[in-house]
Length: 143
Image 1 (cartoon, one colour):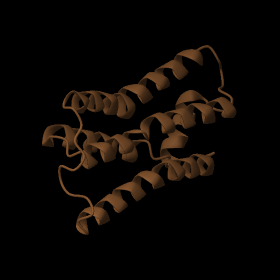
Image 2 (cartoon, one colour; image 1 turned 90 degrees about the vertical axis):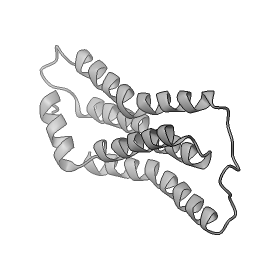
Image 3 (cartoon, one colour; image 1 turned 180 degrees about the vertical axis):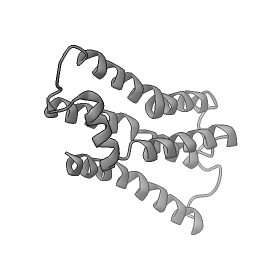
Image 4 (cartoon, one colour; image 1 turned 60 degrees about the vertical axis):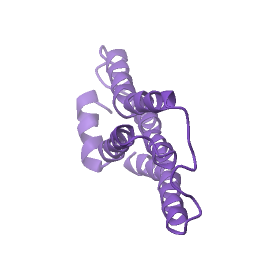
């Protein structure tokens, strides 16, 4: 289970890392200039809210739904637990792509910093380490 989740995590994160590296290289070589990509200011707050939803609220909501749906069961099937973990990974790892958009479009410092911090939180907290997965398996009584 740990290997499956780790592979999925890497497959989701690698494109975001690649985008940031390509963007940094393009900026260093002056292919992209600051202020080149401008979006309406209302989208700054919308992307900020979306990043909070995907980094914090969405995974927490799905975790609560999963716990609620499994509350009367003595043991949780491993297949359902894996599906739950995969959903949380997909939801939380959207946030780095929002961070890329915020950096690319030169968001105001408050929004850009907050979105990048939420992306870092999502990347760090939802990393499928063996310790975290085993802890969740104990909590949910996985077979």
